[in-house]
Length: 114
Length: 113
Image (cartoon, rainbow over all chains, first blue to last red; front, side):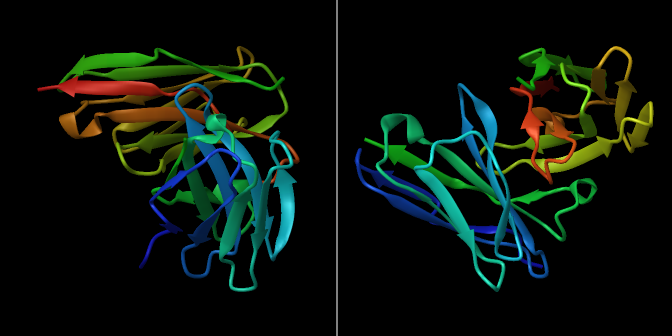
């Protein structure tokens, strides 16, 4: 059974550019959440999607956006990149948007902004 | 602001010893408390979780102890092994916040052989 697949694994972008990260959840999982992981702030919740609808959003600026497709695959986009956006972006999938089921995380996309 | 405070930041334990990681929260509106384990280059993996109506949960060598009145919970790793060397995160899920988690800052555990 394939796990959560995130592409690309590594990415280097220049300040001011935009970036799109992709996440394919475990087959059958319909809920996808995104987290940002940095050494200073740790793991921070970005947003959660279920059935192509954003159910919850963390405290991030509007430059961070996401979407979910009908096959449950999800993308997140960061526009006008800043140096502080350098981080590991983690996608997590869950069978349903029920917290007690727990997440399965992917290995993440390492974004470096220069 | 809702927070989860985790300690210690790092921990060194002898093989066969007990590893103890503590977390405290400041908001009573949490209803789910999971622990995640993360190895370098990998995403976090769910280890064990507890609900606030339970004071203790054990799965193999891993035990969560939960003290609702003190707003504290802890992870105990019995018979610690070198393979347990990883970063551990506690987390809490706010009520009415879907699956969103607020994570502690993590504890890096090293088990020496």
